[in-house]
Length: 307
Image 1: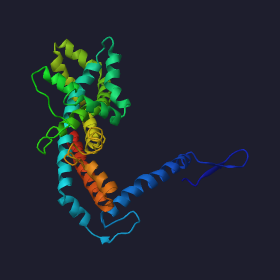
Image 2 (image 1 turned 180 degrees about the horizontal axis):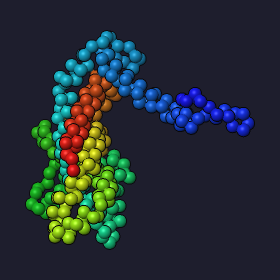
Image 3 (image 1 turned 90 degrees about the horizontal axis):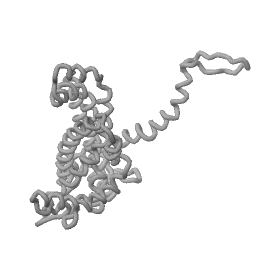
Image 4 (image 1 turned 180 degrees about the vertical axis):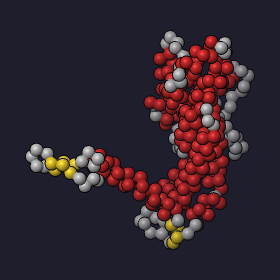
């Protein structure tokens, strides 16, 4: 804070204009240190504490937690499931959102109704909506199998298992995840579309460019920064997939109970159910590092793509 002060008419001290904002930042800084910085540091230390308990006692320092996590079959399976989810949901949701956002950006009568319909998932609980989707995936009377029957595809046991295998379970959370991710993506992309100067479209029409060429040569390149931003945000969100799994199998990780572990779900089980806090902390650090690596890679690609 600037040590320089001024006196008012009553002889009271008043803070210099440079120092006054710092006073308003103090409550925020205290909250940030207590609820964000300290927990992060504590998790890092906890991950190296072997046999750590809620009481704060632990048997010693070492890498045993990381060794256990990286050799645990269920955790390795959770990594595979999470990667499948992320690299399926994020690209498909992004492509569909670009198409929908471009459609919503058109000046068509009644467009407000379509905008409300597409943005509806953002104002609804993912758990509550997931329960509705569970009925839609029902083998006997679900609307999804009913629609597939009209194109000659027999009923699919989306939520069940056959001979100890549940190959369709992963597709359930992928389809639901795409639907759940699109509204936020559409909002950001629509904002980016509305910031594109109409002059480019006018010049393209004068040159006789068709709609596809305008979309490919003008819309997508100028929208690229927003597309990369949404992909980074969505990838971070997708790596933390958890709520999408809960509604379909009554809180279990798939119909078999462990066939659909995701990284966050496995961390939750290690923390709450098994009370292995150090193991959960080390798995959280691994998840953080994975997200960090892919975020840095995307930022690098974004910088290389200069439009």
